[in-house]
Length: 518
Image 1 (cartoon, rainbow, N blue to C red):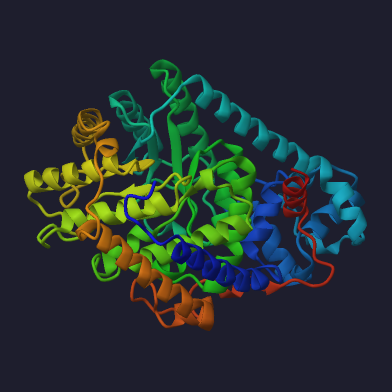
Image 2 (tube, rainbow, N blue to C red; image 1 turned 30 degrees about the horizontal axis):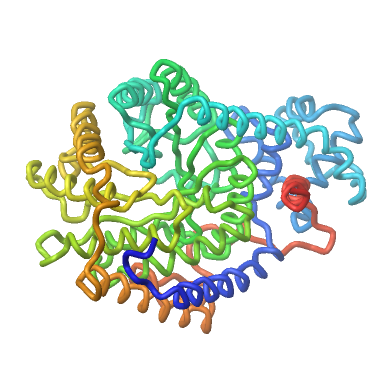
């Protein structure tokens, strides 16, 4: 498929630059770990729960090691040493640890060779559960066939019970994917809240129990509707790998997991983010969870006409980082958006060109296409028209994950009736234009082809620039979303550390081995 007459050599050059960029950052990643990575290791060994003060046990243990031990060798040493010395299970140790003042660092330390042997039964239990979840998802998808494009809607009440009610209603109306928006600011918390929650701010807290509750509800409606309903949540932030692990354990299907979103839009330190995203994506790859990247956000802060090339450049970079973490193309939900001001002449043609360009360059990726938001106002009739045009482009370019626009976007959190109308609009256009894309070609050297070729040229130039100066320096100069971030600034830098030569992460080690075996 080459309706746009894109230069394949330029696409190859873009990928080569992106690979060089990712390799340079990966060299840094391989030498470092973070407190969130270490907490994730504990979670995948079965460490969970909170103490009497509401502090998550993974945080309590890692903070203990930071204060009293040597975190540079990894937390695996300390949990293995404790349970060996006491001759008890991890669950039994947690019960004691929550109540006593004794540090986990006080036990005689085992050697590196013993660590994996001691902890293998624990991580194998959770990795087995994750593989079983993957198999169950695959069984659902094989039993319940679906079309090319999945309709994606959001619930965000703050109360997981009310979220379930709204999610089930949306599924019954025809939604294929349900995303539960996180409570405002959760991405900046350096811990994951525990248990079921019924209060939130602009969304619902992402917790493992909330994941379990929603997954159970969506499985039930999947059986009723004979259509597997996918569940989405958000991993980006200071706890990216922890949320990925929880999502894998509770069979989430999609996670928002961008390699740069937290840096640019949440001012999370870039060193922290790059290390965290690698382990997070490794877990996603192992569990078969689709990642969604956040390039659409660039166009809500920058001009969608002049800065479209930054979206494409970021997609190439996110693809390269994903490959480093063993993600297959079918799990790379690269993001883009319909965000050009509709008052711009020929804006529809530009949107069509850019969406088709993403599909042609990333033919096997489950592209995530985001609706208009920046230029939606209180005129719900105009908004409905804009969303219809967006739905047309989605259908014409065979986007995979179609996040539906709401006509009340600029007014309030959507009502159930707003979602119903959005779903009906998308389904009508999907049906009435089903074969339209196969019936049309684009004019040689016309507006659509020239727009796509121009964006590709600009993306190639930007990637060449980034590959020469490096990703860290490029982010400091504000190449994406016109936002500058310091390499030693932002939130979470104090949670990054260089690994010692004796460092071990028993979980990532086993996952890497499984990919090499296959």
